[in-house]
Image 1 (spheres, rainbow, N blue to C red):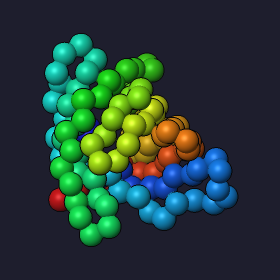
Image 2 (image 1 turned 180 degrees about the horizontal axis):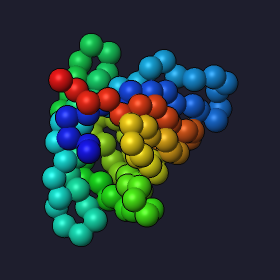
Image 3 (image 1 turned 30 degrees about the vertical axis):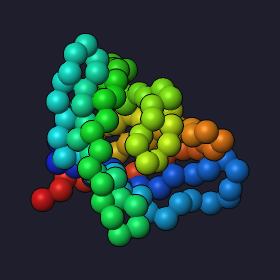
Amino acid sequence: MMAGVALVGHSTRFDQPGLSDEERYAIDKVSKLSGDTWLFQTRLKYGSHEIPVPIPLKVQWAGDTPVITLTDIAIPGVGTYTARVLLYRDQYAGTWSGASVRGQVFGRIIREQ
């Protein structure tokens, strides 16, 4: 479900009104490491640069719905984050927090060509 997709949507910040500009998180490949930990081969875009970033993430299940969980995970060059993001059919939604900010994320799961 998560290989060759992009999460395309918006986020909020509790300390600012409104929505972010469109955000895009590319996921090229997902492979199981052990237990409920999976390696997400992602591409993160910063300005005009796209950086490949492998991130080990826990995936837990709420019935038939996967929930990506990360707790105080350091992402190189980005920062340390905690998030809970659920995926269902072609949508995602969740919460996130960084060192001094937090908010919500939501959007569509789009299969990339």
